[in-house]
Length: 173
Image (cartoon, rainbow, N blue to C red; front, side):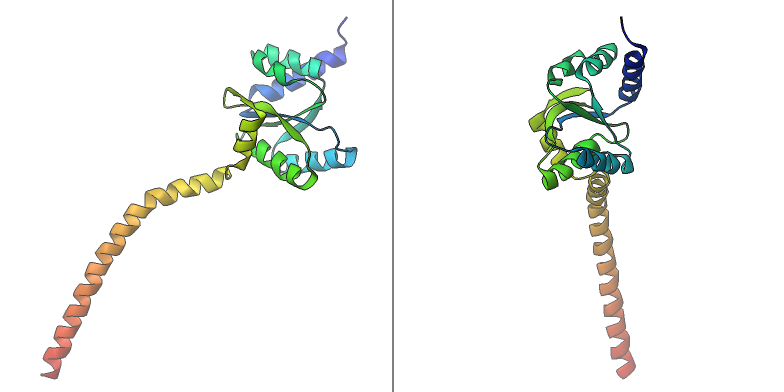
């Protein structure tokens, strides 16, 4: 018989995962309660949910959402970082935390509709943030326009300098 608390937990997790752009699974073995609490706090400040989950309940939630392939990652102690805003943010937060504590270790994840292994999640975490990438794109689009404006203003500046020199020459004569 399924306990109501377990059914409720599966529903909560399913609702959290339904709108997620990024689901990063990690092994938190070796982290104490204080470290996990600190990690949860860091995640929540950034709008990322961080949950320690039972694998059987997580499997049910993933299956109900049609994400059966992520079940292979659910072995051993598992925590999940979920974001419905930014695909790379949970991985980046976990990587920064792991750089300080050497833990948690990535198991893999489900990002933008595709299953990622631990190595791919590591690479995703190494990417610059969304705002930085958008800034780089804007800068790339602005560069040709900026060059054209500098070229045009240089021509005008040169013309003004020539006219000023002619005026000075005629004024002196």
